[in-house]
Structure formats: structure tokens, C-alpha cells
Length: 301
Image 1 (cartoon, rainbow, N blue to C red):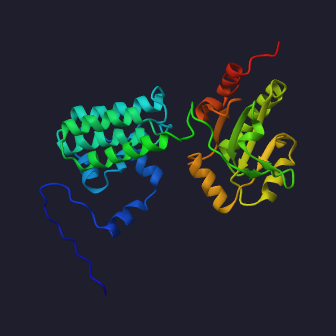
Image 2 (image 1 turned 90 degrees about the vertical axis):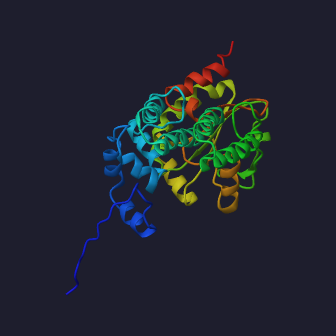
Image 3 (image 1 turned 180 degrees about the horizontal axis):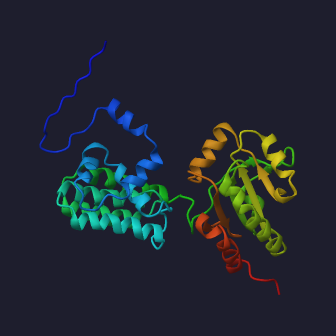
């Protein structure tokens, strides 16, 4: 019969865990784990364990402490709560290592939606507080690369990246940005299996019906596994989607996702008659969609 034993020892401060132990911990229910972690006070010794074992976990804790909202807008309530939690850690925690982690986590959170100015502000604070901290070099390099990418990134004010796709509804008919030259058009990355995408469809149908007479066009690019799923979905009278469609696959899909920095769907852009991007996803979902279109496509006189 196998025997069991328990070895106990004291260490001066928390030490990193072996990979196999981390794997065991990560197999726990993630949602429960985060819910419990979000209750950690900003001055708790438990954060020293987080700092030593899995520092990236603090970003998840801050995200969950914000109510699980998307921390992608500086003025959003989720962002306010998440960064307030990090600031409390910086102010109240006795450990300098944990304080530094709070600053590095701020840079981490702002880097996700590529908010470079805000990311740099946290990196500057981290360097001033903890010169030589390994995260400083990491984020300096990230900022340098991100700045280069942003020169051609699909962001407001930049030209829409070039692409060429086949029209799903018209054989041997190609669609490029030139197809919409002189028009306002929406580029919508979606999938029939995507819940948030389907939730936005009524808004998009309503907007298209209202603004197509003002010259609005729409191009939907699907992430579905096959074209049959798209066709079956669009047979539903509520999902007709009476506009341009494309179904990029393989390397073409990878190229498009990289060029347009599509990390999740729905991913939406509004492009103007001159081919420059006017608005991105956050300004094109829910009630914001019609408000944005009204700004650029005034009623015909």
C-alpha cells in the first residue's frame, strides 16, 4: 500500500511553483477562482504569492474586480474599477515587488486594446519606481513595435488596409476597397455561431435599411467553418443580411485577421468615401451604431 507524507518548510518569501503544480492549480474552475481572487484586499499578503508564482494573474484579478467588463476604454466603468484596484495595491501594499507588479499590470491591461499613451504612462511610472525591473525593457520594446505597427494599423484616420476577397453571393466577382470608392461602408467580421455577433444583427439590419438610400454599403466577412453554415443562417427571415458577403479561408483568413488586427468578433469598421477609417467596433455596436452613422451620413435633402 502506497504511503503518503507531507513535507513542511519555511521560506523567507513565496517561491515560484514547478510547472506541473501550476498545471494542477490552473485546472480548477477558473470562474470560481477569479471570483474568489477578486475579493483579495489590496494590502493582502496573498498578493505576494501572486507576484511570486503567477504575476500575470493579477491582470485577471483586476479584470474580475471590475465586474468582468471589457477594460478597453479609459472612461469605461470597468476600466475605472480595475485601475482603481491597481492603484490601491500600489498605495497600500507593503511589498515593493507587489507595488511594481501593480504598475506592470496597468501597462498590461492598457496594452490589450493598444492604448499606447496610457500603456507608456504606466511603464514610465514603473521605471521611476523600480529602475531595472525586467518588465520595463519588455514594455519599452512592445511600445516601440506597437508604434511602428500603428502607422499602418486599421485605426481611425488611417487608410483601410488593402484586401481582395470573393463575393460569396456572386461567382467570380471580387471585392476590394475600390469596390466601395466614394461611399461610406461598414466592414463586419462575424460568424453565425457568435452570440454577440447575432445580438448586433438587428441593429445592423435597422441601420442598413435606414442608411442604404444615403449610400451606405456593408461587407460581412465570416469566421464560419464552411459556407453552408452561412447560407443556412441567412435563410432565417430575421438574418437575411442583404448586403455583400465574403468567406475568406486558410491563409487568406489569417492574412486578413492580421492586417485588420482581428482578435475577436464582432470586429467592425466604418470606412469613408476616401478610404479612411472613421470609426471602430466600440462606436459601431448597440445604440452607438446609429449615432455614429448619423454623424457621417446626414439625411438627404
